[in-house]
Image 1 (tube, each protein chain N blue to C red):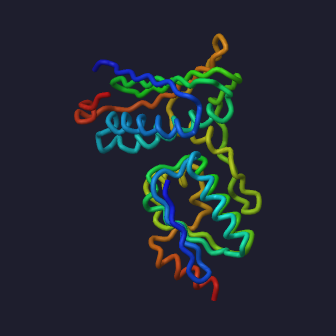
Image 2: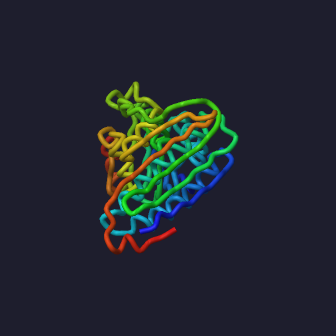
Image 3: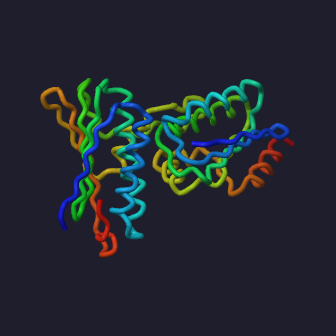
Length: 148
Length: 115
């Protein structure tokens, strides 16, 4: 199967994240179209959403460039931003919700992102943050018919 | 996200549909906060038509939980969709949140707590 790649560049606003998420969700649904793979669509869409929200909120970047690649065994999301150098890939625990009084109202984004992907890498090159998230899968014949 | 707020007796029922995410949740949070500040402390949130929820949506749900719990009230989530169930589960919010299968079941539970 030939790799398929989609590249999108957008201004860092949460409204744009909504639009991009819809596009990514469509690609994920097509890629993970086999019934046994459908849960992966929600997982990867959510992980990517958290990555983009994080970039919009914290990085101070002027543009966000994302690249989505579908191979025979993986979907790979690559996001490039400028702005503050920050590695979001180290695993972080989910906030502790055991105490009703002290329940935190935040801190879930990075934990969700890391929980839902198989591989996450980060590098800082020439003033650019480059985050890569990967979700691996096994295609059924039906799923392999999808394409971007 | 679209939402509808209905108040009957002492119970606030919020029906959500669409995407419960960063760009859409703040308005709802403010409206529910206003209602709890006015003294409403029994809240039903129908999540059956929420197609997508992110970490911000979870954060708002936790804020609602604290608003009513701190006032001795009760928050019930009605029939969360698969997408919501998934996020409740991975964040462990499902161990804290109360879920009911229908609005009528939720209203009954609240009535029992009030009486």
